[in-house]
Amino acid sequence: MKDLDSELSIRELGEQGLLKRLQAFCPADLVGDDAAVLTTQPGKSLVVTTDVLVDGVHFSDRTTSPEDAGWRAAAANLSDLSAMGATPLGITVGLGVPGDLAIAWVERLYQGLTECLAQYHTVIVGGDVVRSPVTTVAITAFGQADPTRLIRRAAAQPGQAIVVTGIHGASRAGLELLLHPDQGHNLTSSDRAALIRAHQRPIPRLDVLPFLFPIPNPKYPTPFAGMDSSDGLADAILQICRASGVGAQIDRHQIPIPAGLSRWVGAEQAMKWALYGGEDFELVLCLPTDFAAQLVDQLDQSAMIGITTAQPDVWLVDSSHTYPDEQLSFEQGFQHFD
Image (cartoon, rainbow, N blue to C red):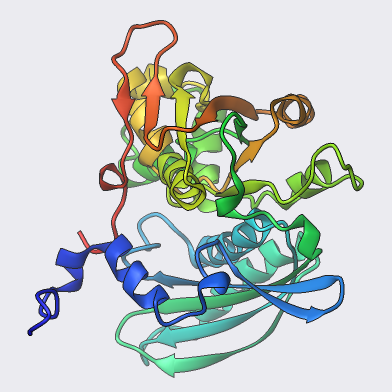
């Protein structure tokens, strides 16, 4: 009998459907998180993640200098390591470039890569260069973690607080300002600069890890559940809930949004960018409520935005009853093959 799906295109199958099929070729216990975990020696785990950035999809000359493209490429991979509870060791770079691309562009890309990596004492340890019709940067990052302190998507339990480590919607707003410089006149110069910086020079939240794991604490056994919000806040919450078999209620008024954003684009558009804009590179964590409160007290601009539930659906609710409850779904966010 012919497989009814055999002639589906990638666009028809969708990103999540494609990932599900490709993951079938991998050991089930090594896929499904932000990075793979390989045991290398007693008490240590090697954490590996790969990210691919393509000219015209993830960066362009209109919005991103070569240095900023390099910084963003490094930050994306370091963010995946932080989302696993791992500290970085090094990266390799696979570079696909057209033959007529200026050498100076490539050197500036690597300057941005090393500027970001230097903040975290991380180096480029190798890679590959090939000819390509489209400039493509593929990075594999290696990190190290205590296997008892790994952060997994599938570890959430009902009744836990959902914490975000910073504001959301800033990168999407920064992209809009770069694409349309005539917009945002009612923003202050500092708010405008902060939004553009959020898009061009995101900060991976490796700084959060010492607050999560200060000392062994039997009251809060690890692993915590979590991932980064590079594909959007809503996507991160949905991914964690699906992996853990839980649901969530998110209070829209608790989601930290950049200063001036609602005044510029309106409350509804600001919320849409916060939920689905992506590339904010914050951590989304599910934690015991009392520990979550301690963490929020220690981290600027972080917030408890909701709670996990036994019911599987994820809802955006309004404690002031101004907006109707809204069920969140993957379809509302960015899809690579739409």
